[in-house]
Image (cartoon, rainbow over all chains, first blue to last red; front, side, top):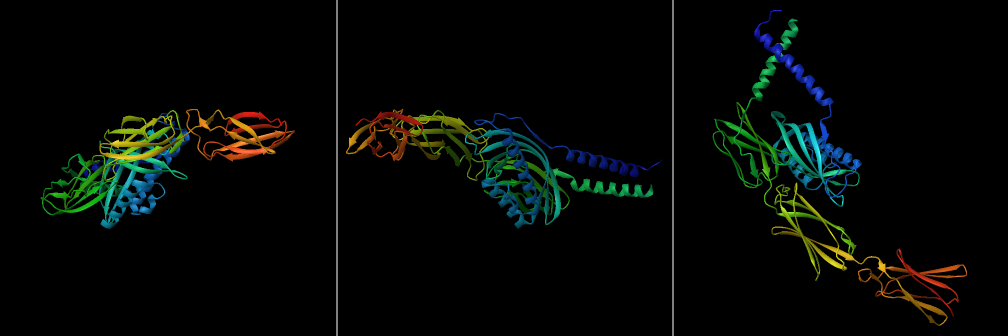
Length: 173
Length: 288
């Protein structure tokens, strides 16, 4: 088959696009979450059930944050955030709404390490090397997307039925 | 084949257009900015643009005249964290990433547990401090926290702990002497105070005496003290039990002014015993 170079180039792009799509699907299918072993996290022993619950609730909090930021609906934070984190994130979303801006976080990878479990069991701290894409939309018009790799520090506290994120702050790189 | 090639051509053009849109240039911004600082962003070119500062802690939007400096006022960008900056102009988008770091410590979140505990308990008291700045950002740089546990009119235990990831903690022994203790956490001029009540432990040497009082026998404990000599608090229940020919009568008495007293039927040959909590006292066999 004798193809001219523009056709060859577009075919090349198509193949690359298909390969990228395949890789993306593969990445979605794989677990993008790793949790470092941490039996000793300071003053209190961390039971496996607690570790599982904390990681589960922390990841759920990211999902809530993604939806709340995309829909500009701070109420979506209620189930997973409390205290300072909830107040600050709610303020961000209220401000986004006033500006007509939305942010869409495409959650990527989380590399989690639990680092502190307080002696009385009332707070647990973790570090998360997170990777995600953030897209900014102004009045629903997509403007730009940025790939972010940043380490987050989260403090979670227990409530009646789950752990809630009380502090969520990235650490300087 | 022709359709698929046409599709491929269209996809290719779309992909190239996306590449063109996505083509970005770096934006000149410092890598690290202290929370609440004024920020000035140099821009170049002509026309109008919009500067977006995007992080999970804050989102800002500023209209910008290209060629002039875009300014963020002091206090405007105050939440610590990682941010993306996008300067969206008519023909290109400039981007940057930077961190906003916490200011100096301004407040402490101090959790002291428990608020009430027995005296002389090894590592019985725990203190946990999270250090925040004026904007309620967690201060992540290592910070020295001084903990002081002082008995009122007594000794003081002092320990200095450096924060790791914004938190400092320690465990301390409770004092041998009962009473209120002041538990203080201090970072520079910032202090937080809690009161910890140290109460006497279980009584030591529970002893009672008995004497006739008409047709009854009056029983009374000696003043109750724990093993460190602290008076057991009034209200502590003391139980007197009288056993006689297979029958048993029990009287629960709260401690008043350090002692418990009651009267029981004066049955000849009865056995009277006393207990409080898990502590057993002496036993008396009553003879007429």
